[in-house]
Amino acid sequence: MEASKAPSEAGSEPSGIKVIVVGAGFGGLTAAIECHRQGHDVEIYESFPELKSLGDIISFGPNAGRIFRRWSNGKIADRLKPLSIDLEGHGFKIHKWTGELVHTQKAHNPDPDAPVFNGHRGELHTVVFNYARDELDIPIHLGRRVLEYFEDENQAGIVLESGIKVIGDMVIGADGVRSKARELVLGYVDKPKSSGYAVFRAWFSNKDMIRDPRTKHFCENGDTFNGWIGPDVHFLFSTIKNGQDCCWVLTHKSVINRVKLQDDADIEESWSFPGKLEDVYKVIEGWDPICKAIVEKTPSIVDWKLVYRDPLPRWVSEHGRIALLGDSAHPFLPTSAQGATQAMEDGVVLAVCLKRGGKNGVPTSVRAYQDIRYERVCAVQKTGETTRDLWHKADWEKVAKDPASIQMPREDWIFRFDAERNAEEVFSKVVEVN
Ligand SMILES: Cc1cc2nc3c(=O)[nH]c(=O)nc-3n(C[C@H](O)[C@H](O)[C@H](O)COP(=O)(O)OP(=O)(O)OC[C@H]3O[C@@H](n4cnc5c(N)ncnc54)[C@H](O)[C@@H]3O)c2cc1C
Image 1: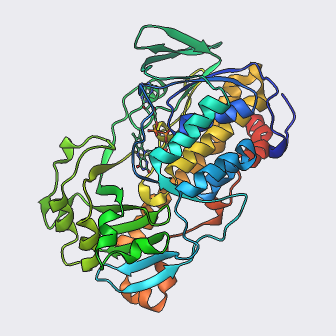
Image 2: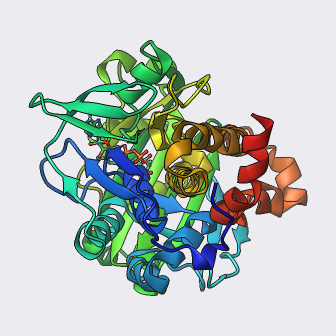
Image 3: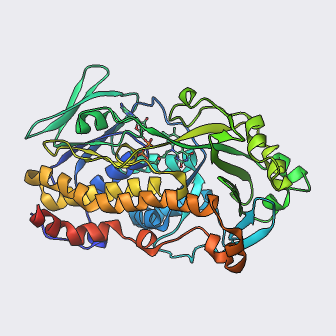
């Protein structure tokens, strides 16, 4: 077993470990970039045939910013910054659904080593994807759907749709919420449960917002972030890239005023299922009219059903050579704002464990990855529910006395965490205990 190195010294001394990553989302890309940093030989297999700028708003907390900052001495973080919301002058303005401003939550104290990035998922994803492929030369095989996973005591591999088998020392299943790798690891199909909530989401240009005197102030003087909170519903609206782009998310119960908006069965876990503006108007009926003024400018919306999964019993296969990572292991509710960040932390920790365990210790390292990550991830997952409930069940009399009680929780144990340093520190102990 190799000795621990401080994070800044992490280098690319070859480990001889061949890692196959399935999925080129933020989880898979980060795992691959971190494996490359730690000296492993890594390649990615991804089913989409070409890179497209998909999705809308995505959040990376400072605990992800710390990871980005380490890539090429801050070069990647510098590229993400102009694509992300800058709230230094604005903060987060929180309103009661009827319109009154109850609290302004200050922007994060900027920590240059742990910046926050909130921006368009496709734009941020493109930066990371291009960095992995074009600058680190990590092979990313597009249009390669993985149909099967296999392993024995000595190796693990995948079978592609074409029938081709690829073999390595281990496989990372970073294949998202509808993971195939999860079937192998669990031995059954883990069906999602309905959370009872759904989210309408939209991203659009500020063109019509600027023309309307009721809405132009959101876009004229840099970026803004406003939230309206009501019983069982919250509406978050932000402007990005100096007010140029607008985006909103409306989280609501699937059933509003006893009317089911969409049959749950019709909506898969999809990022592109179209929604109807009439349904949005139903949800915000009686709300601050500015919410409708914003929604009216929206050319199209996505209706995203929020599904829920109890924590999986394990993320690692029987022989310890296939590991789930990111959404395949632990999907998050959006109110945690930590789903992509936790997927990134997974990749960092797994790459460190593989380095520390060496080529002969792969199964031990992969199990250590699960042990290091499991409790933290479950605890962060819960914040998705607690923040939602804090808002949806707000006691407005209490908020009037203590306006800060309604602000978005920012907990140090989540945000100030350094996943790489922690993995280096605890690895030996975790391995000893097992
Ligand atoms: C198209 C898309 C749009 C999204 N939009 C948003 C958004 O707007 N806001 C937000 O907060 N989150 C969004 N997400 C989810 C968010 O990116 C993840 O929750 C988070 O980043 C964790 O990422 P992940 O890498 O674990 O999973 P994902 O980002 O879901 O990545 C999984 C990857 O695995 C690939 N894959 C799946 N099955 C196979 C297979 N059998 N063989 C090969 N490859 C496979 C998928 O094509 C995908 O690229 C989106 C995800 C996707 C896929």
